Image (tube, rainbow, N blue to C red; front, side):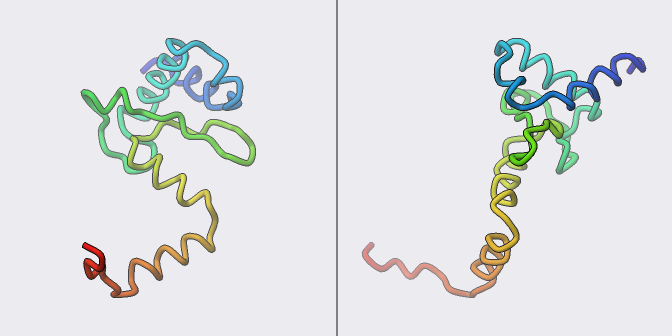
Length: 109
């Protein structure tokens, strides 16, 4: 990848999510593809290669506090980040729930 192309991708991340949302769908797709190339074709979080139909499900991940774009994520990682953005208390509750050993017993089925 050329240095200019890498710089363009990094500069893209400086975009505010609001500005990103106001661009055309085609421009948003182009921004995501430039960033994916900058990330060597992998999700910015799980590092799994994004190929085929999964490319269409790429999400421009952004900080909900500052509005700054961080990178592109696969759909699964974006969903996980949404949960994490709910805060440490929610994460602790989710871990307790997961580890509680309580299982659905089919009541009402």
